[in-house]
Image (cartoon, rainbow over all chains, first blue to last red; front, side, top):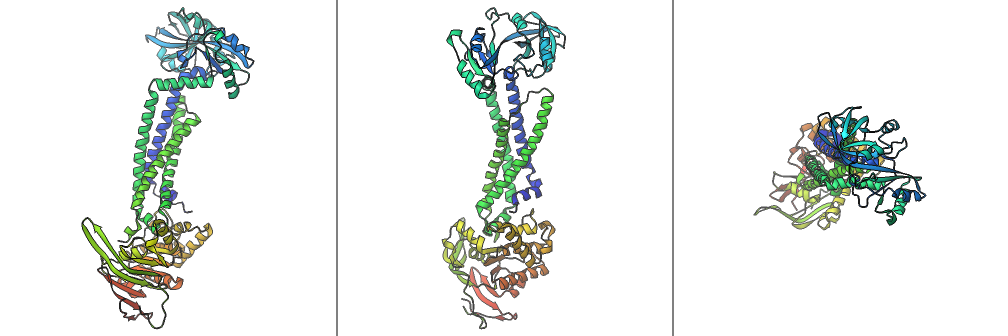
Length: 379
Length: 249
């Protein structure tokens, strides 16, 4: 088969360039937007995704990890009664006020009280054992490298949280939070910083690691452990479900989701208009040739397919450009501590959307073939 | 119709029976063809000549199945074209007709060989058959050495020969040509006429050509003169080049 669509695209690339660029930029914008949304709102669940726990146990109905309330520490006994559970660890999460001498005024911080053991589950992925060991010292805290400026401190500096002195013992990366700054301390330090007597040193969450980390096993355990009235109010989620729940809460609660969809629709529309106009012009430019093919008996349906194929090539080339540029920009973002994250399903969805844009434009351009009437060649 | 004594005419492959066609533009209705009947025979180059606006291109469009009629009927290879729907007409054209237009209408991106191959794929031929037929057709129009060139690298005459090869490669029973020489200089025009003539003779193809080019008129086997939507006379050129007057049908 003579690859008419592809050869025309290569030969008349100048004509198709606007369409390729429109598709490429639309794809790139969708991709970066998705990566930023996932990165920014994914940081809402950094406590979960940065940890190695399989199960999270918290106050019933907790919609996002930052909205937890203290639970009965005795739930730990209930968890350990299940043979699937290997170990359990408490996690204290609290809102606090940070003051430093750096002239930054008060900064709202989220204090995470974790077990600083080398094999502790909380922030197992973000904090290497050496850094965790630093937390064993009283009043030691670790913050994200990118937050130092906002906190007005450097490594080794002191500040106060809720009026109590803390010292920045080290910095990590991958601790950035949404709507505040994450400060990691040991469980003991965190209890000292909690000035709400109602909490009484109780944990906000209990996290558990299972012997079997397989998804099915984790889900089965979560189902078994779900609420037992004898231990007071609590709820069990798999880490995966709780992370997703936290992220969705932020996306939906802040209206960001609607904003993202709106922007995606605009990008799609603008991309489709430019692409379809370019393709329509390309069809119009080859109208006499298409009409000649139709005169020779090549059916209108086959000609439509040529135009659609051309649109898909434009989509494919644009997508390739978007992927290369997107990967480079995401690498740059990661390098600069910009929260950007992309997972395969979302990347695939962006690719599908981009090809869909090209296909829709192709369908619009196919209408131009109606004027390819071979009888008009005989005038 | 009377034919010269020395050859008995084969049955016509193309026949129009009292066809009429009018175009409506706003409130104006202009009659292009009026109760016109002709029969075209295979194996010869038949020319429709006449001043512009006489309806000769419309007649060609109707006889080739690109345009419907208001009255009368068209029989092509025994098919009543008026009875075929759009899809069936496309199929009929695919299998039986070739076209050569005044503009060459070649795809700028394709080489001469690809231009010829393109329609052949839709005939359901194998890749090898397509290649063979395309090369053979380009050889027949004398373009085999230049079959790897794109239209931008070919002269006007060469482009028209590619267009002829494209039509010829389908091995059509009916070959229609609309002013095939009007964009060409004398030498190239002559070459194109010779090729069309040869196709009619060697392949037994019905070649119907519309032109007001006097060179074509001299080389056609038969010349139909049209004016105001009617055929005024029907002249047959003898092989020696002398003309034999015939009464119009």
